[in-house]
Image 1 (cartoon, rainbow, N blue to C red):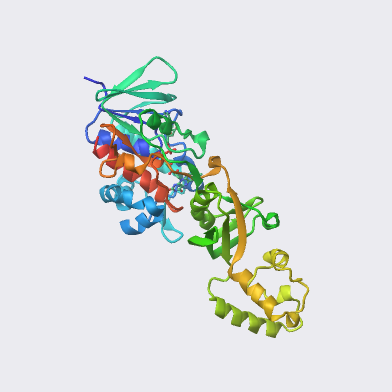
Image 2: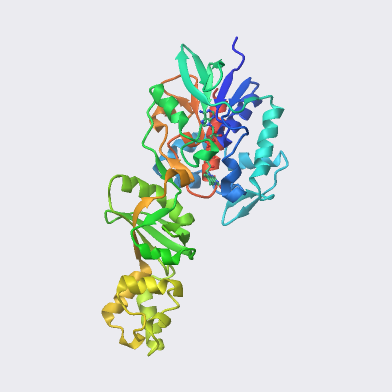
Length: 411
Ligand SMILES: Cc1cc2nc3c(=O)[nH]c(=O)nc-3n(C[C@H](O)[C@H](O)[C@H](O)COP(=O)(O)OP(=O)(O)OC[C@H]3O[C@@H](n4cnc5c(N)ncnc54)[C@H](O)[C@@H]3O)c2cc1C
């Protein structure tokens, strides 16, 4: 008789929840974590406030994970946002909705969620081994043997859940170890990139805009001149380029195409309320009204003053030119700039600064009904380690909890 029915590697959001769910089913569970506490990364989510999930139906969620989203149907059907919220509320956690659908604990601190998870581990007698880094997993029949980096102990179980996270924010413990375990067992891991990450631009003049935010703009991402994706939302200029939710949501696509050495650009529509035609008409009206006013002052309605120097640099039109001297061609150039302020993306910020890892255990390797490896019986995966990444908004934590639940259900 082995002392544990299930061993979970990694006590992040996903592994911790998988351990709780397995133990709830009456399994004897060991949770192994390299840190001296659970959920180090969960503690910094949502700027420490933890955007735990999002409002919406399963179909809407699936669309937030790009082409791999369909893999999550079964996991979401087993355990979705309402189940997560019930789990929390039954343990006294009140939640609130902000920003068109993001759920946060009313306490405004991720610690509330971590405390609930810690108490649940205790309640269900999950044995936790802290400060223990798993070094390898070996197989002998159905038995999986887990060797730790330090100490001579080995742990054996027939069922293992690997929940070691991805590569982002490695200081929280996610250093990609699970990918190595998978590879050593003959399981394919896709290429890994940063996602939900700020972007660097070729244009250095954005540096002057550092700290300047644009709200509710439409941003399109182009690769080799072809439109790949569009996001509406807020963005921020930084000393190296662009950040903010709308940019982060496009960053995974940027990483995909930069990796293929394609030219990647973003086009920011600064006046999304107008069509190109209505913008042209409105601009002409404003310019006519402005008469002898200098052009920089005449178009304030469409462009925040902070952006004027960049616009004049890009368009070559002097900001001191009088409105009534603007030629038809120059007006066209201004309309083009307002509706598509283009910046070339040279790279993403490094994966250490990314919110999530794009890529991971190849989806073809995992049965989406059970989260079990198709090659190795009794070996399951959950959380960020899987080749799925979602948008900002609580989608990644919901994925971590839902896949954890499904893995535990099938152990
Ligand atoms: C700054 C930041 C903010 C974020 N904000 C949000 C948000 O508001 N909402 C949202 O939905 N998502 C957010 N995310 C994403 C979210 O944090 C992740 O999707 C989620 O934490 C993934 O959970 P996980 O359990 O799979 O991995 P992790 O949380 O990374 O946990 C993996 C665990 O495995 C342990 N481990 C790794 N290797 C070993 C080993 N060899 N032996 C033992 N233990 C090991 C690690 O120490 C770690 O504790 C944010 C991410 C970051 C970086």
